[in-house]
Amino acid sequence: MTDRLPHEKGFHISWDQMHRDARALAWRLDGKGPDNGAWKAVVGITRGGMVPAMIVARELDIRVVDTISVKSYSHQDRSEARVIKAPQADVMGDGTGILIVDDLVDTGKTLELVRALYPKAHFATVYAKPHGRPMVETFITEVSQDTWIFFPWDMALQYVQPYRGTD
Image (cartoon, rainbow, N blue to C red; front, side):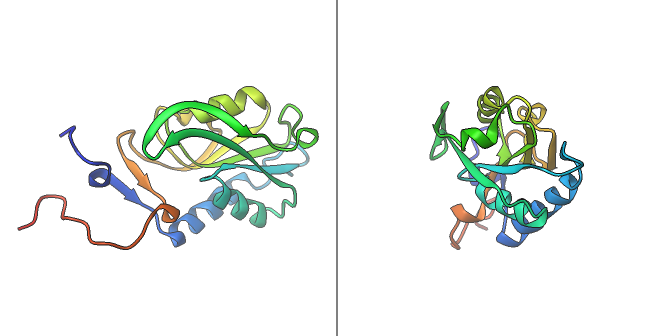
């Protein structure tokens, strides 16, 4: 059954679930920073990493929050990853003490690009797929590679056909 549409093997994440999972990520990261357990800053990979990065920053009382904008998707089509906005250079250095957060690691191409820029940063995602999992040190939930994750910021309430038909 390889001719499924993305929603037919979809993992739907609600706002509540995202909040719980991002808080769990923060708890897993608590005390793991290189400065007596503290982190210097949180950098969210836009756009999906902004929500969990904000929650992690709040939970761990990290006041320096920045973003890195990497474009690697156009709707559901993957393209070559490229940085379109970098975080503040004087904060980043080689990444030491920096916590880089994203919603999902899929193939790992986005994180591979960011890791090349900040090799000593700690990479954390809320969700991980097997191909990208080696690119993160910390994550909460692993899903299969062929699962499409529907995040709450991408969704609207509407009717969906049953998985096995309409009878």
